[in-house]
Length: 216
Ligand SMILES: [Fe+2]
Ligand SMILES: [Fe+2]
Image 1 (cartoon, helix red, strand yellow):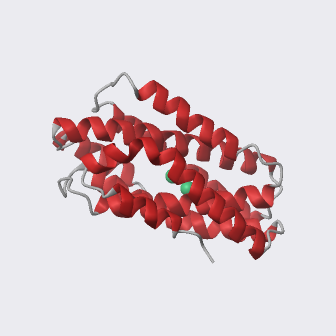
Image 2 (cartoon, rainbow, N blue to C red):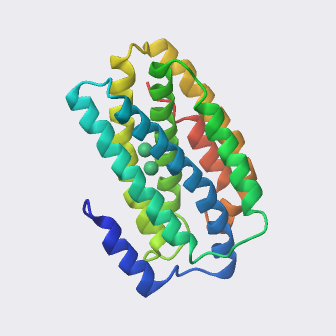
Image 3 (cartoon, helix red, strand yellow):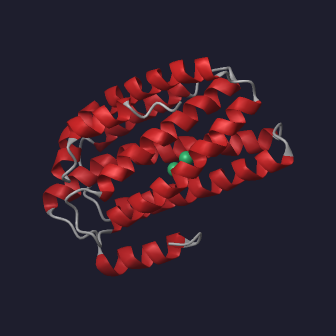
């Protein structure tokens, strides 16, 4: 998929539908709810940093490109949710995820903040890697979007990491924060273990992989 992948993907979603069993649809509704909170929080963070305008021109362009990517991720997940069941527990899950992202955003030190975001994106890459290899139909829009998000987030990891370093983040601090982000993410994703299993992702393996996702 190219940069304007969203149109192609949306067309595929409309023609193919989610291509899943009812059980997988329910699990995906829960997973998408939490992932969506992450995308929406990323849109806010990058939009705010672009508006602040403190970054040099080249970095500002890269941050703006991330903001646009996150908008597309958000739109795609919102489109996808239209096809998923509106379960009673989605509201509580959304509040749970929103609290997690709000807490993460409460840090004053912007170097650490962007360092944490790069760790977070690296965790998202791992999640998408597992979804790509799940039991879901290969042509399912969920698998396709996982591939796209993984590709984009890998780029974001590098940009946020560079930006954090330019703001003065030391590698020692970066490493410590990475351990914490990975641990907190596993804790936040705990209630989704059954949903991961329902789409054929081994949740123990996924969580162990997240713990390993600390970047050097
Ligand atoms: Fe994203
Ligand atoms: Fe991102």
